[in-house]
Length: 390
Image 1: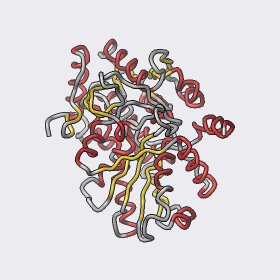
Image 2: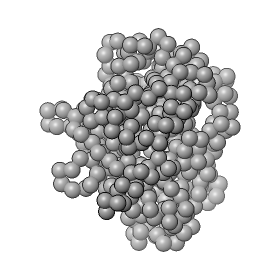
Image 3: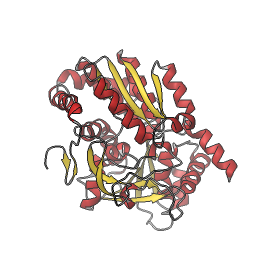
Image 4: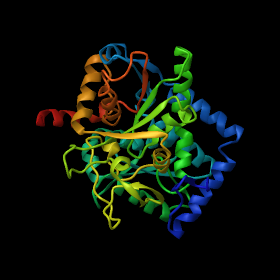
């Protein structure tokens, strides 16, 4: 594989002013992260602060209804309520070892922003979070959490005022303040080495799930399913299972309202190759290469690109990518809550919705593991508004 690439996807398409901090980060990854001191501190933080390993839970009630085994990898039980903390604790620790004083981050659903603010507070770093103005309104609860943790939240009024625009603003900040600032990117997107760095920090999800499932069943699951926006929870979940061909990998994107011509975030199922935020991947774009607006009921999926490793897994045929609508995700949110007593994030509810659609189509011996990437407290306002509209 060419350095920084996953097959034909990835790379480092960045302005000259951004090359020094990217090269510095790549060097630090190779020098600091493999060291015993970093690994011991990181492992201790994951175990005693983040709360790893997270549980692997079999949904007995839903399994009886579906006719196959449904398991949830409970990232919603990690500190701050989502998988994002795995990445931010690792990157903040790396930044501290690099001598940086500040984290700058972007966020869509707010969970990465909360996790970045949390890691910064823990390790004594300043934190600035860029967030699309639309998402500031949709995720007011998480904005309050970030501010209480000491972070400065900066609304982004340009463009679609969502995650894409927050990434643009955070990258501009990093260019200007690179000497003492680390950009804590929240997903497996962006120029090399970010897709690799975030994948390595999130891969703990799949390693745990594989070991837990084998320990309890003596076999591998037939399917592993995760939602995909930028794709960090999915890559984290998939990575350990990629070598095991008997386990199908399914990523679930957001189809929006599902009507012809609607805005959506189904990048892998409907997008085309192009360059966005410093890497070659699949994008929602016009024939002329202009980025199209994206949409999802789940703010964390509202992104017109995707991690390059996902584009590679799709091109290889190793992973399948499908999409579900806002309405299907909302139904899945409600069904899990009322059947298992778990409020899932709307992002995770997309993955669950796909699995619920398989009822009656899989044999009873089949087991499906879903990455429940976060908890749904942050989405109660969106859910209430959607239900009232209905």
